[in-house]
Image (cartoon, rainbow, N blue to C red; front, side):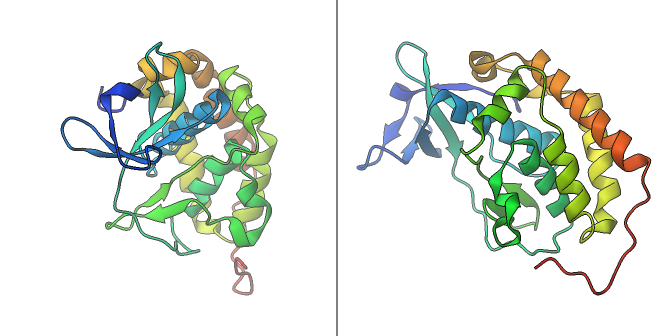
Length: 228
């Protein structure tokens, strides 16, 4: 239950004066609330559970529902996180792989790859938000048939700059697939899809990552290469 994707009813929150972004519950815990369409809700939940499954930070997302128990947005705890992120952060390649799995357009330009990333006081990297631009890619995850090409392409490109972190990134996806996403199941996730389909997608992607990067040599370090 500690990791499960939960449901929070809108009436259980006390909103600030703007009635949009910040709210707290009966115990005084602070949350950021975003009202979103269903595809974006699916993307935010998927971002959160995929990032945590491969061993990096991501705020736990609960699904906001109305009085009819229809999903209308997300609820995320307010956390103390810092920006900017170091471009040589040891967990950056794993964050890139998660972004690529969601079809995040932040990866199309070197200048935006650190967007929606932050670190906590212990220096751990966190993936904060899902890009709303590719909901069709998220839909495929919930159907059990993810698009893998973007992940393989992104890892191929960015591992040239983070060659020493590729083995751990590959291993993280293997462990995630072996463990599965069942720990993140819960009433919120069941409103959006089936954890079995997500596990099927995770297995397919992990298989492709392992097949691609275990049969190829790890990129040779080049002092001349830096991530612009």
